[in-house]
Amino acid sequence: MIHIFVIDDHPVFIDGIRSLFADGKDQIKVSGSANSAGEALPMLKKSRAKVILLDLIMPEMRGVEFSLILKNQFPDKKIIALTGELNPALLYNTWMNQVDAILMKYCGKRELVDTIHDVLAGRRVLGENVPEFHEHIGVPTGAKPRLTQSEQRVLNLLALGNTRKIVAEMLGTSENAVDFHCKNLFKKFNSNKLITIIEEARKENLI
Image (cartoon, rainbow, N blue to C red; front, top):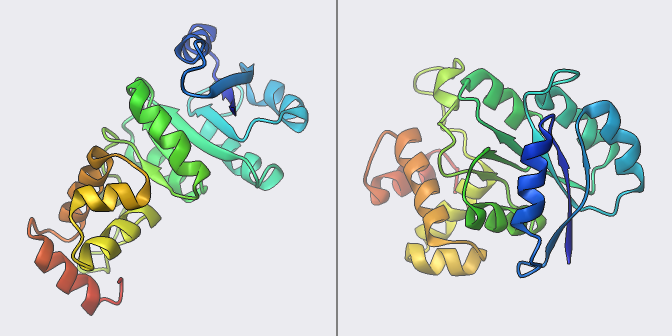
């Protein structure tokens, strides 16, 4: 059983996550929850949850700042940031604070389950509908593309001649997730041809 802890200032959202996993079929259980950062800290010290679902916008302390505190105090716990925000600066700062994943708050159950397994396997994930934020935060034109760990793994495996379906099986994730990473790679390399991207990545020593 995978134990998760939910931090959100809206109790209705927490109840929704609880009901999502109430039948136990996914072997995932909400073993604790809190409505604020201050309430969560003492509870997490006693919690056996390995994954934290963290709302980014809360009144007492925003999740983007709290994520850094959580990473420092509980380095063994994985953090999945959940948000409805599209602000690229907020998303970028959250990512740079080393959260393990960013998902849109009302993503589907399958994506949430897949992401929980991905982060526990050591992968970082940007959800399917999370907007690309690197291009909005002043990365100089012509700079070497900055790849997430997941994008790096996908690109390495594709460069070896594997199909997207095989890559998904090798990474233990969905083909949709691999497609999402490919779309981000197309944007970052400004090309829709995988062969061109692989060649450019090799020139930049990215693979």
